[in-house]
Amino acid sequence: MDAMFLSRSIFSYFTILVGAGFLTNCSPSPTPSVTRAPMITFQPATTPLVKRSASQLKRECGIEQQFMSESSRLRQQARSMKPLFITVHSTQNKRASARQHSTALLNERLRHNWHFTIDNYVSIQHIPLNETGRHADSGRTGDMFSIGIEMCEDRSQILYKTFDRTAKTCAWLMKEYDIPLRNVVPHYFWTTKNCPHVLMDNARPGYKWKWFLSRVDYYFRCINSNQSNL
Ligand SMILES: [Zn+2]
Image 1 (cartoon, rainbow, N blue to C red):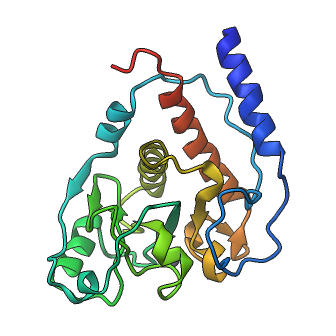
Image 2 (cartoon, rainbow, N blue to C red):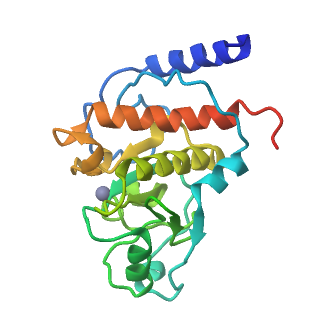
């Protein structure tokens, strides 16, 4: 472990410990805050970093763009957005892949929309990232300021691989939009809905969400430790 890595690890751990504690009020704040305490604390992964550039990590996400029509009802209602948060959901549908969700959005069969649907094989982007979706809190702060990610629960796939691709996508988005880790939140954060239920414990963020955040943090450190920027 070199000194630079050690100092970064200590700094990272310290910044996570500062502001420790659960959020006591889960209702959306009237204005988005980037200074509040994290929702939950976690132990950073000690796995050695596999350094790569942000663009390399983006390639690993396997992002495909299949944009909904600009004339679709949901996109007509959208506003322009500067993303300050990333909101993670899961589909609660064990019979549909990312491509099937994309088809449903393209055909306007759903009442809500979001930015990415992720499964074992792909991360499909449905709308531009500077445009609001409708996925978090009925048009309030969560929708107005966050990139929405739906994780598929297709029973023919392996959930862990979907979690991993989602963690990579979150880390890349953090880098791209300068979003702090504390603003990577579960849908629960906005409405206390049990979502993404596959990463909740007793219907709220706990051990599984901590694990997921540690993966996001790990991939973010992987791209930030890369000095060569290949
Ligand atoms: Zn949700």
